[in-house]
Image 1 (cartoon, rainbow, N blue to C red):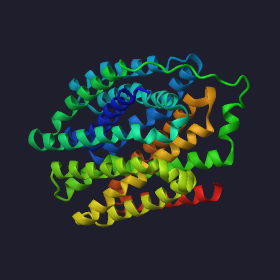
Image 2: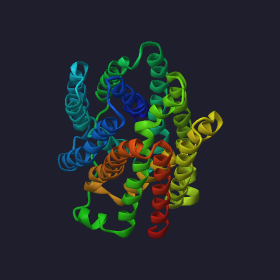
Image 3: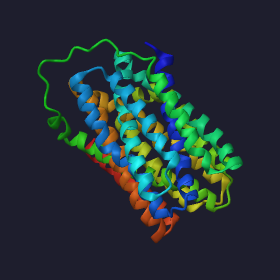
Length: 373
């Protein structure tokens, strides 16, 4: 198993996320866009995640050669992103974000299949490789926080371009694993999706990421409005992801002891607590620090358990589309809906109330998982 080559891909993929999520909103604000426009623009990469992963997942399931698809998506991301350096209008930025995110969002679900194929029967050790993505996020979010403080948000596009380029170069070092023998007869993918447990799982993923989208789009802006420096904001983002690394490290034993269902329920309940704390206590460094530690559960444990379930629900020729459905329902539809609605709510009712709504929908998701197992 090419541990370090697989890990390096996650390092750069989520390193790019460490630039895009905390600082792209600040860059858009620096260009003169308001909260509603920022919410709309930040919803675009998540909206493309609804379509792109499933389309490319279908190609991967039927054509094989998933790493060729991954490399193509990574290269086109780099090429299209170059246009961002010359664009400042709302519609120009929107078009560029739609195009480069369409290719970027096609990459990860296919690579997840590749990584799990290399792991084989050791799929419970997935989190030990995935944690390097969290390390990449930490490195970029801390370094860029200092850079934005010193030079302003204008450095954000250049930093993101460099990380996207590194992602493409890392993809060149990884080959496709040996092909897996598929059963000749498999149930249709629709028959799997229609199972009540699977439908409940996807609904819970959608609701969790809708709550996270408010945090992803506006957390940096929220802290900046309360007087925090960009360096401190970057450090607080990194606190959450450091906690996430710890969660990935223990997930192997956690899944064996209590099972994926209870991991999901606990993660959703903790998410509700986290959004309530962030919205209610923005001036308390201690409470904000504690809320960031909860990222270990609101993302880390939830995501690892979700990947485990997807790997069990969707087998054989359905693997790529299963990963794509997870990405589309959660980070795609959930993220886009939450970002879009969050932008309007932020302007109309205020930040605290918006985070309170995020907490409420996390509670709804926890009930759904408990009810439908």
